[in-house]
Amino acid sequence: MASADIGLIGLAVMGSNLALNIAEKGYTIAVHNRTAAKIDEFVAEAGELRPRIIGKADLKEFVQAIKAPRSIIIMVKAGKPVDDVIEELLPLLDKGDAILECGNSLYTDTQRRFDYLKPKGIGYLGVGVSGGEEGARHGPSIMVGGSKEQWHNAEPVLKAIAAKFNGEPCCAYLGEGGAGHFVKTIHNGIEYADMQMIAEVYGVMRDGLGMNPKQASDVFKEWNKGPLNSYLIEITGYVLEAIDGPTGKPLVELIVDRAGQKGTGRWSAIVAQEMAVPATAIEGAVAARSLSAAKDQRVAAEAIYGKRQAGGADVSLAELEKALLAGKIAAYAQGFAVLAKASEENGWNLPLGTIAKIWRAGCIIRSRFLDQMAATYDKGDNVNLLVAPDFVTIMKDAHPSLRKVVAAGALGEFPLICLSSALSYFDSYRQARGTANLIQGQRDFFGAHGFEIEGRGPGQHGKWPSTLGN
Ligand SMILES: NC(=O)C1=CN([C@@H]2O[C@H](COP(=O)(O)OP(=O)(O)OC[C@H]3O[C@@H](n4cnc5c(N)ncnc54)[C@H](OP(=O)(O)O)[C@@H]3O)[C@@H](O)[C@H]2O)C=CC1
Ligand SMILES: O=C(CO)[C@H](O)[C@H](O)COP(=O)(O)O
Image (spheres, rainbow, N blue to C red):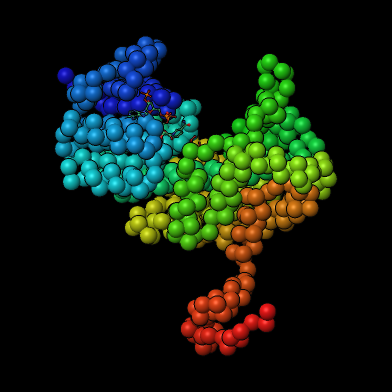
């Protein structure tokens, strides 16, 4: 007898918390996991939500427990496991049922799965979920793409479990096929840039201003009351003040400086490059994580070039705050520019204002200025944020500080890969006449690629010397 409103496969961190969130909102949910022992454990620990959770170790019984047309969430490791689960489910589903794949999948995989299932009459929704464990349990940001018809079946549940901003659910249908997972990928690309810039500012505090973690924590906590107010600034304050139990030392000083990465940041940088959209802050953040992982090489190189002297950064905390604000705005501008271009190329018609709105709560990049970004796009200003009036005002005030911090980094030997690339992006973007005229001359010299001259049009060539002096 089918009694569950929805099903969920994959009871790891995200799946188990989403299942509890769904049950808490009054829906009955059937759950399944490859390793069956986890199902019993999960149901046993569900407390008062237990009556609304149906654990099924047998996949056929799991499917039969869900009311038709079925909505089944898959929350397993991204990649092949998703394809494996789809293949196992397929013979058990009926036309009109829908799979909601909620992991961090590559959007082209989502598109491929959507195209594969459509002729079989099975709906496929690629759903980006952000907010980590806490978000999944109490309200994530939910970015939906794929089969519109089946979205309407799942909409009440997804909107019920999503985070709310001023009462509005942070959940929206964004477009066909892989649109939802694409938006989640770019969300993560922005997340990488945001985190890297915060880490760079922490580096200036630690190595250039001689601040200890507690002092840095106090500054981030203070900044969280102003224009930088955001989840990432808030958690940075907590991470910096944490103390390691066994040693009594600041935990952050004991954590090895190698950052992990699971792929979404890299995918953002790759797709930006593929579409010829400059996303230097995101690219810089990915490169910084890769450099962080090359610990042995860094140790060897420091032995060759010498350790930089501590202190000596000629910047104030107020300048650091503004520099971070300017850098972040440039990074978000890049992320939204990638979304705008992808929307055009894939015919998704991505609603940028709605995307900014559903990122205002629940997700990792939630921040005060996303509300302003939402208002900008809602006005129909589909422009680069750097030229949107609200952000012009902020950038005019903040870019001199970014400049000063980047200069201090260059002179003081603090690596600011992300902040400096954000500044160069800003400077390149606002420069009416750049230097690519020389590149065009060089290209024509060695490859007869031609160049354009105002008033004479494209296809011009220079009379270059045929032999060189050396
Ligand atoms: N952790 C986070 O903060 C966030 C994660 N995500 C994404 O959500 C998804 C789930 O993440 P998370 O909860 O961390 O779990 P993991 O990515 O660690 O995946 C573990 C789950 O996948 C299942 N699984 C792995 N391989 C297979 C397979 N071949 N067939 C069936 N099931 C399989 C595991 O089953 P078993 O128990 O049998 O091993 C387990 O339920 C991922 O795509 C992740 O990138 C998204 C946002 C935030
Ligand atoms: O999607 C997420 C947050 O939004 C996940 O936490 C993801 O794992 C973050 O990426 P990475 O592990 O590469 O830092």
